[in-house]
Length: 153
Image 1: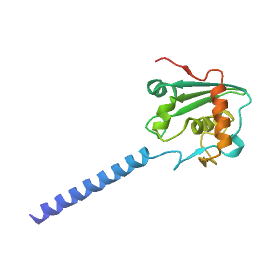
Image 2: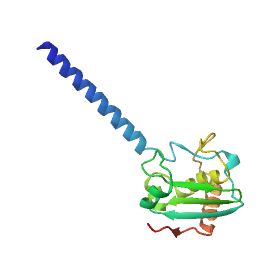
Image 3: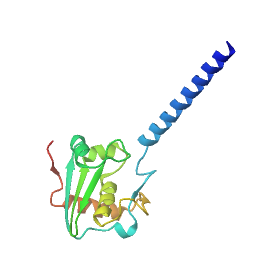
Image 4: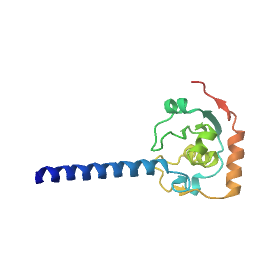
């Protein structure tokens, strides 16, 4: 009888610990935002892009097919860079905001990859409140030839 109670106790403790770890991991994944995660590229990759830049906005269904998965519940953006040309695919603005980011921060991150910031994100920085850089990024993003273009599923 004592052995059975100890076994049940052990099982209960193990299950409780497993649930606690799962809940903790889920909370961490959901709370990854621009204010607690390093999302900006190093300064040498955080400047206007001089080549041909295309920015395409897509919905969640297309994003799942167009870009590689990330640690976030849904990928916010991805980029494909060539020597003098880059394509940035971004999730719709309201979905980026709902994920705890701003389109400007996500854009600056991807623009860094257009400028050949490596995918290992070495030297990434926390989001800043640099109003000038945010406005510059917003203007560059909105003036890209295909900004607002939509890929239909």
